[in-house]
Length: 204
Image (cartoon, rainbow, N blue to C red; front, top):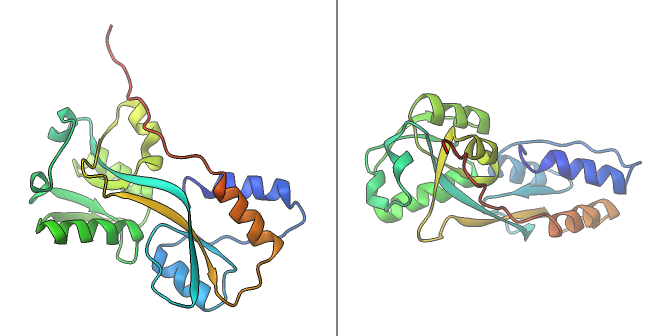
């Protein structure tokens, strides 16, 4: 909703200028519920769809990273292990978020207790907490590209590559596949892969 939707809508309107669009931004659970109630024609989600009545097509690659502010002790690190996270303060997405579900599963599998200092449904709130409140966050690399380049946020990749994920196009199995849905599918298939932005360079 934050990093993909604006450009997708712009490209969609160029291809289908006379199509009226309505967009809703929410977590995976909320989008799934709206699709089941026929309140949306299609959804783009990062989490796991539970209903067998919905078709889920993985189309866009993404990955999560561990983010911290420039003043955090982790800012001098290049890697981490699960045990390093034990007892640390985090800003977390809300329950129902695909990002939250993936990270919760990671913590449970590795038996790592953390302290959820802040729960925030919006990326901007998470970024501010990382910078100002010395929290860690697990967040899509797409959402912090500018901050990495500016040097206000330092990111660490998951060394096991198990935070890799795919954004999925979702629609009801009984849904008529319109030109609009096919166009959206085409745009998602062409969407660029995430890249690691280079951090800011200071000094000479």
